[in-house]
Amino acid sequence: MSITGFNTSSKSNSGDPRRKVTVSSIQQKKQRQERITCLTAYDYATARLVDEAAIDMILVGDSLGMVVLGYDDTMAVTMEEMLHHTRAVRRAVKSAMVIADMPYGSYHADEDGAVKNAVRFLKESGAEAVKIEGARIELVKRLLDAEVPVMGHIGLTPQSLHKMGGFKVQGKSLAAVEKLMKDAVALDRAGVFSLVLEGIPREVATMITAEVNTATIGIGAGPDCDGQVLVLHDILNLSFGDAPKFVRRYADVAGQISNAVHSFKSEVEAGVFPSEDESYHLPKETQSALETISERKRAMRR
Image (cartoon, rainbow, N blue to C red):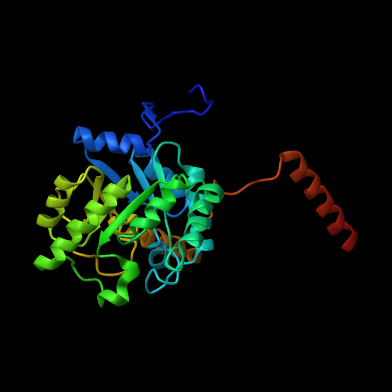
């Protein structure tokens, strides 16, 4: 227990104490050249499992629009949907740092509105930081002035899907590399505590990681970033589509769920579920009393 009264540690499944992950601890990992882990989560159950696995950061990504809500892309996700899912995640998490993705339209119109929306994530959902896409330097400064830690995001930015003409690798030309470098340095100087590098060549991510002081978190950016993030549903084969090149599937949860559902259906139809052991029974005294009543009714009908 800290002097402020807040618990600064938690326990993993093995019982080992784990300190709460914070902006400072992420920065310290960068300095010590320790790899940083990040996964998405969108509900209590998955967030609890991810947290108990000692993942450093949990991103409540706007990818929930596609993998949870069934939208075609991230553009339709609303603030209320993001707040709802972030609250569910926060209830499950004891150690990981919880970061909320600011959805499209929540920070694009004006900075005052963007700050208000970001504050809502911390105040109403319990998020400990927000993520915004693009090199929005002045907005980052405004958010930090409002005590809102910021995770940056450059490269392939899904909310710029239409502008980019689809999900395409960014930073292939010399001019594009130069812009990515400038944006990364500017965001670093503005004060982002971490920087997602998505869908860019490994060589460019390596240069950015060496150049900036903030922790770089790669997704489709090669192995030389300070950390890696993936969508949980992608690594579990729950995303119902072709996986991008950079995704490694660690389990076929979709297959396991499908098998379980088919087994349930067949056993119900065959009459073998529920079994005697899976059924509740009356106490002997109640059963005996019911039998007595039934016998009396039968006698009266004779």
